[in-house]
Length: 280
Ligand code: ADP
Ligand code: MG
Image (cartoon, rainbow, N blue to C red; front, side, top):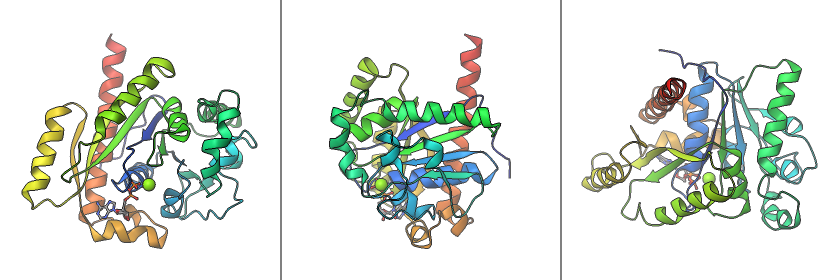
């Protein structure tokens, strides 16, 4: 198995879609695990009060755990909230607790409310550097199914957006609202933000519907849509109840192989983009 190249600088992704249940969390933890399994340093920031990404990474997150909430409110530096995941030694997590649901309101009156996560992450990367810790290769921020201040904080902290799209009938509904919001963020808060990656998830590969939806998404986003398609798989949905990603729970399953291919494309496309950049 070919290992993943280290990107030239830390790549920060926000995984977003204001629809719930489309595979944001599953995509976040499994792509992160696929990259970490080959030795890359990967951080998942759980930015959803439900804390599903924390659970899937085997990180306990009862209310009161030092978490994304404390980091956003500026009460602790990010390094105090970073925990190693249960399954892989170079996969890290800032857990989320239910306390985070209050942050949406508490942030409103705080200074720099749209940039709290960006600032905390930048300080953390600098701190790692000062400590002589290895540079992080990838950061993935898992978002709640809304476009509120938590998601805004994720959009200003990242350079790339990864949008999981479920292969179902209303897949594209609501997508223009998400893209409009990203344009607004780009125009007002974070000019470097780009939707670099779209991933088709939960595909019932044998059905015509899944093929039609995939075709439609590719028609709209030919450059962004990965060729990997994540199949609907029981192994993927079982893994979190063991505090695992499917990458360690059942690495040879179809779901794990599909996420591995998605991670591979994401890595190769990043390398290609970096090359284009340096030739400009
Ligand atoms: P979101 O974070 O967008 O709300 P999740 O990643 O939590 O979505 O997925 C919603 C539900 O669907 C979860 O129970 C998850 O385990 C399940 N699921 C996600 N992807 C798959 C898949 N490819 N096959 C089967 N179940 C999946
Ligand atoms: Mg989720």
